[in-house]
Length: 73
Image (tube, rainbow, N blue to C red; front, side, top):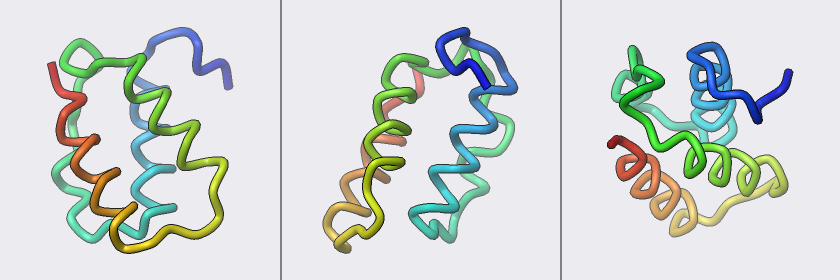
């Protein structure tokens, strides 16, 4: 999958991967998040950071959740 090209499919894929890896409970917040309402580059950055790590401290999980809230335009 080429994540460099912004698409709704890529947004959905990255959000699913992020919420799964962080074991987020309230994933409904990210449902129906449209491509044009997201800072796509920030989402890619968050996705790449999360993909590199295997474990997260509670503080890191909280910080990532806060960053995900900020990606909305």
